[in-house]
Image (cartoon, rainbow, N blue to C red; front, side, top):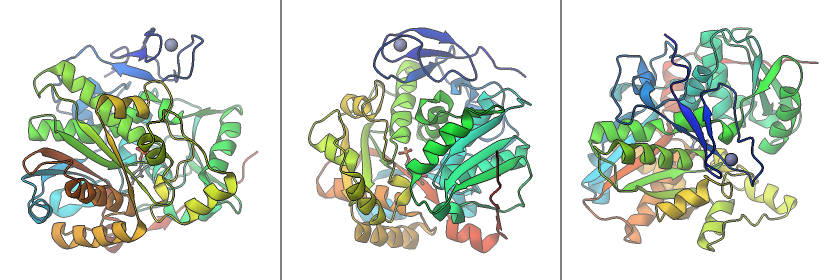
Length: 409
Ligand SMILES: *Cc1c(COP(=O)(O)O)cnc(C)c1O
Ligand SMILES: [Zn+2]
């Protein structure tokens, strides 16, 4: 099966349309930076009998489907919902939770973006895909590329390499380059940029890649199909903001679909104090992020437990980015402390029966803040994105292999 030409891309700035293309990351016209948005001929989503997320292929900008089963699962939360006094709390669980049949074995929603990014590239494409990551994205791509025998190179700060593990030994198509002595994601991004310009390599593109955002939007697609309506509220912890934009873009597709309601989901997005650049910008009604000094930023990042939320270049001001999504949905931003997130992780595990990662603790804690601030009502439909969970359980149930760094060039 070949699904090429099944999607188009529209520039969020000038409206220029582009036909399906596996590698296009941006508009050719001259204007301020803008994201492209994927649009599909199939306005009403029909589930297909394909594995995992590929049942939603109507709304994925891809060439082909992968033979892989993982997907988010959406369930109605009885216990946490009851504890918080919410009748319609739905959880999108992205990770490992065998009792609920949740089997993203790299334990985060980054695995969804790996599926869609890889499925956008033609089969047997000979060049090596390069991605910079501080953790979950790297774990997702290395595992899935190894599984499917796709050439892949990860660039990662040395201090983060313990995040790269799998339940199977790695295949040689996957390589890892470390930035020695670094604990900073920006260092990895800079090196990845250089490597992806070398012959034989190509860049993934980060938030600019429509397939990445389509993958991160799948929790919303799955939830709307399960619940039968567009929720009123969406809670997620953010770093780059890609997942927030993705949730909004999925919302736009459902508005065009028309069968699931006509509301915008209010985005309730959160970061971990003391590194909260997006919270600060949004709460001061600014469409630009006011960056602290490098020394101050590094200090803030060291003080954060949910490290995956410490992206220093979020997709906030870019046209079609997070500022717009928050504006359109009358969104809210929350700052969550380390103490709050740790307390909330324990609460979640005791009620729902599965461990969750720090960033998911941040999102859940922001829901508690929203309840206290009366930003949500008892019978509102609420979608809580547990972006990562089940790492502890996964490590109990599986033998773990790690990846050794390689030398290139
Ligand atoms: C990357 C990541 C986030 C933040 O996602 P963005 O939408 O890219 O800001 C949240 N939680 C987990 C587990 C992540 O890996
Ligand atoms: Zn344009």
